[in-house]
Amino acid sequence: MKKKLLSTVLSVAMLATALAGCGSSDAATTDSAASGDAAADTAAEAPADTAADAPADAQADAVTTVGDANGTHMECWSFVEAHNTFYAQMVEKWNAANPDRTIEITFTTYPYSDMHTKLLTSLTAGTGAPDICDVEMGQVPNVYEGLDTWLYPLTDAMAPYAGDMLTSRLDAYKGADGKQYGAPFHVGATVMYWNMAVLEEAGITQADVDAVVTWDDYNALGEKYLDAIGRPEGKYFTSVDTAGVDWMWIAMAEYGEDWTGGHNGTANVELDSVKKMLTMQQGWINSGFAQTSPDGHVDLEAGFQNILDHNIVSFPKAMWFMSRFTNYMPEEKGNWYITKCPVFEEGQTCSVGIGGTGTVVTQQSVDKELAADFLCYAKMSAEGETTIWNDLGFDVCNTALWSDDAFAHDDSNQYNTFFRNYPYDVLNEIKDDIGTILTVKISPTINEQFCNVTLNDILENGVDVETALQTAQGVIALEQ
Image (cartoon, rainbow, N blue to C red; front, side, top):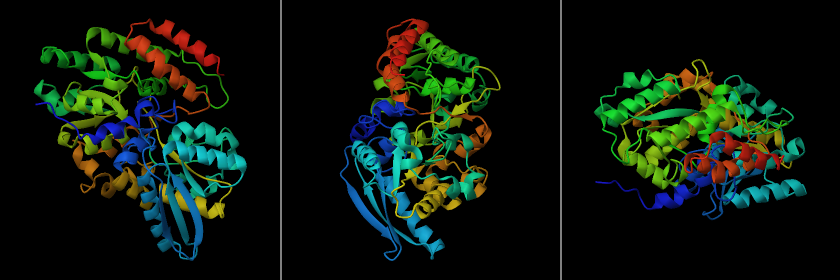
């Protein structure tokens, strides 16, 4: 019998629509979607940062004050209540460890759009900004506009932890001036999810999955699976997105390309990596190897239901998607296995960091140095990263913990026991192969074009890949 999700999932997942796929990395629209953290965090009070940071426009303002009333008082804003709950825990830990520098923080959770608009307004005006504020990845270009006239660099505060932090993730929150302004919640490393329970029924073993290195290997295994089950209508090996650009990010990372052109370059979506991925996906659609994801990508109710119905048995997604399983597909416990993503050519980078929230300290803080020290302690120290993993389910950026058995193999952690293998074992395997695609001013334009036009043209309407990309480039060039 078809399994049904809780009705509340729809309203939760809709928050992440554009960005959990299309915005999972670059916010296309700031009101209708954000990266993963939010969608899950906002409505479900649980993780998932790029869609893990989806907009919380449906929630009312929530205000809580925590800490030492005799300490330095600060303000912190977020658009995800679970983030503020985490920070509040870290205030207590900070005060216990720093009795001579105690703090009290008033945490306010605003709807996604309201918070970012309010932040930009106060930064521009030079008054009214909080000491500390979450910034969703898609909003980074806007908030970083003022760089160190608006924001306080975190370089000195993060120095005690920098040696253990994943450099490629920190780079995503650097300004055009090369300074570090944002503290990340997670890596958002992209991995492959495999439904081993279903694959095993078709005679495919874990060893078969582990042997997949290239996309050619992936194609061969998919054909083997489809042949084994008789290619019934409605069953596919994977799904491809028409409302999300995650697959494009994977391809660009593998070839070391970036369609944004970086902070000071010129956008170019007619990249070989993008052409290769879209050509492969168009072939998959034509052959029945893949379907277009219901509602545009897997990170919506229809996508969850599609997974539950076993209509697809493998797909790439950031590690924050683990929380989608625990929150919305708990009956799948023990069925799924995680591996690195296939590559076009052996030896290529096999992952990319997707989505996220970079928390900033503003120049209006009552004590910028103290605020920065607390923030970096909260989001980079072993104490903070352990709390992030246990409470939010994010793949943390402090790589020293990845090989700490007590952390990475802790069976009291729900994510460690939900999947057939330990997530951090996979992260250790791909540690040096996690790429970065920047989110800059042109990113929303690229996302909007691809999610509204280009991907549908290619994957739904059969438009020639090069023709569709030429059209997209023309539109994007007008915004440069």
